[in-house]
Image (cartoon, rainbow, N blue to C red):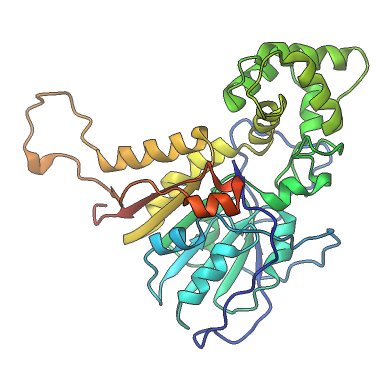
Length: 373
């Protein structure tokens, strides 16, 4: 569930193919509401979808370009089978490791459009001065709309590196980690949406238990939810990561050795606050519609909940024969696959896991678009 780990930042290798330097354009996109999402009372109205490229605002975010090691860097970019003059989408820019690698393999006619809703990621994108590159401030569920506004209907490859990155979890003020006592935020996009603290202030015990069970796969979900609501009802609103971790620890009687008892609860709240699974479910059909024939889809997952969605979607598009057994139909009339799986799932090497322990749960799945419409 965690992408990357701290290391000295790397720069893209110089290439004779690189286009003239230009300030990175940013496209601001009005994000569609995801199922189950709620707006914060303080949330500003988003800007309308625009095809006008604008420069990113100056940021005061501390350590905006945090050190970061990209998981499965070579494997993921290789899986895209880059065409030098092709159009590619990095749906999860993060700190730009995959984007830089893709740009190295594009010629002057190639294009790369990257998406991210994290303000720190936008700050990091300013380091890429390349006219072939466009950054979009949005969650990737708005991918098809944003690309359409740029006049792009088909692309040659899409990469999704799901989950949370090390810079996000290691920055205390983001509220993702129980290792620090900080405001309980957990939003991927710090400029909008409901924080985890705001959710805990209004949720019911039943809803909270469902969130923790469904998104954290936590067997003590009911006990944890009851403890959190009791704490709130006693006048002690949970507003920091330290408070939440302490309450959860008191409710969980058994947990995996070496794992903090609050691990699953923090994961569940993060997924819910950012509607990560809903976003992924909305995005997979868009990827299918956007990919040109022989275009590649590469998805890196970090936990079973997101990997299950990816695996099932690819399987459904590879095996489209859902007719009843012995149904009288000619083979030529059977639904033809829109995707074909490429190879087996790829996991980090022993060497990568040793260098970056947070990569150990990563799984890369790759599929290729067929000619079937």
